[in-house]
Length: 227
Image 1 (tube, rainbow, N blue to C red):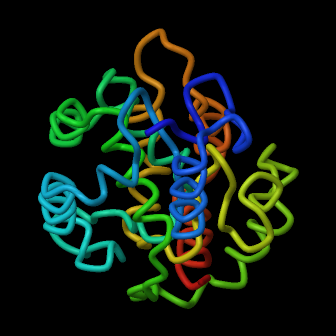
Image 2 (tube, rainbow, N blue to C red):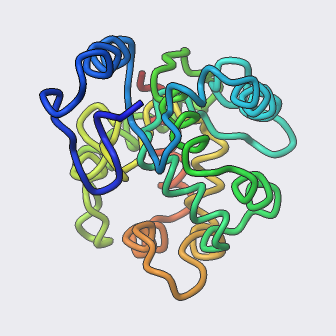
């Protein structure tokens, strides 16, 4: 089947034969028709391999991708921006983001599978699991909305949005597991932007460096309460 979207070129419906055009419209109405190479995301989602990969993801990230509070905190993927998920999986595979387990996971995924998983997780809307300390929520809210000019820390909403749901390659922070966000911000330089490849996560390095531990905990607690 010819697709609505191919790498580098958008094919208009009038260019398709009638049967392909009708099927494309039905698939688009059902959710998405994004094609990477010759394999559509819709086809991948219908495959047994997709369900197997999804079950594997749920082992760590929770049944509804809401995150998991264990020995190692696992991030919430529900509602996450698809482009961000895809970018991070590539970063794991290319060792620009340090995580041996996720490097192996990402290396085994082809672009179509990555896109299918990212699309699936983005559409989930599970409730945050909570559990963050509430004593510093006011400080966290102030940092998120106003930044810390005296420390050269910009307001978080400027990139992540007033609702903290992000956009495109900018990640959703709303409802993210408190312990996970704390861990990422405190260890940013060791985990993100490794190697020589251009990495959009590098923009966060100065911000993470200029936040104190207590400020990191405060803003992490605040965004964990958002939905």
